[in-house]
Image 1 (tube, chains in turn brown, green):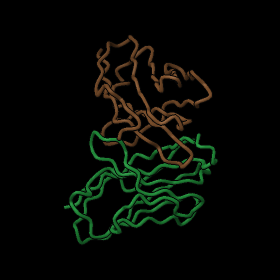
Image 2: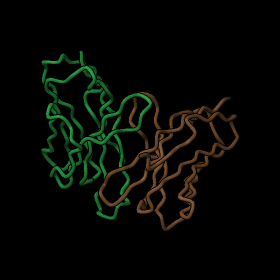
Image 3: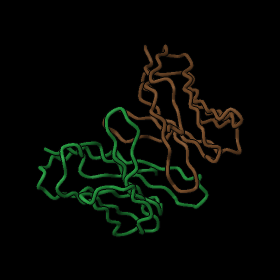
Image 4: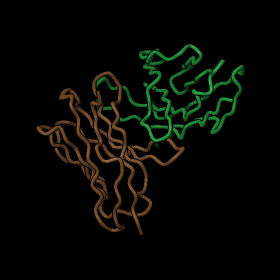
Length: 111
Length: 115
């Protein structure tokens, strides 16, 4: 049973445009959400997080939005750059230090 | 500084070998993790150490043996592995504040190949 779902396995956008990556979760006990970026054969790099008490968090080109009633979060990247091409994982954290991961979305930013 | 280091970067071993993976962090984090990652899949949790004590073992086979010598170091001892154990092994660390809002920071990983 997938508690964190990233329903788009891949996404392709033009350089300079907005990339929107989506994530849905089922467990209302999750209270902290994170986005990681991963290049092949490297460890995940932390991008941005959001606590369940907020609905938006922004860091440079990256913004995460949380809609608790819909159990949905999204990562916006504006403007998208070719170096953003990677796999993006959404993860949820509860009290027990475990991260529950989505299956990832592969983003391709085309020049 | 959010750096977690791992050595070696690559490791090839036979099924009868004994080897160790090493991980180090100097962020003052008190929780450290071992994950296994196969291609195109999310990381799979193996072990969690909190304040140098093993707090989570995700039913990992005994051929994987973790060790936490101190708060900055984490080892994973490997013995009698199988070819299906070939994967990227990731170390991570976090503050362990007990609030459930700690960010885990990952190392670059060790690419393990078992022949």
